[in-house]
Image (cartoon, rainbow, N blue to C red):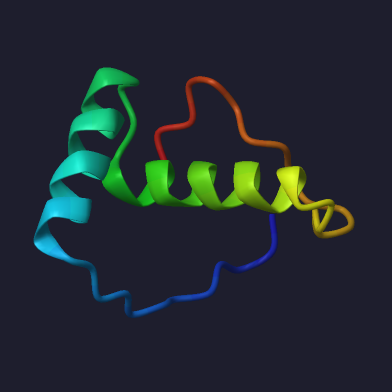
Length: 61
């Protein structure tokens, strides 16, 4: 697997809390949940990166 990029992300506390709850419900880390949500959004927009690994249901990040 290629090295991962580090990104500083500033979130509204309510958004972070909602993502953290969603992540806990799906047994993922917050980081993995954010990546999962971004991949879903990219797929929906028809902008999936070439050669990317699809989001998995049990990805723990």
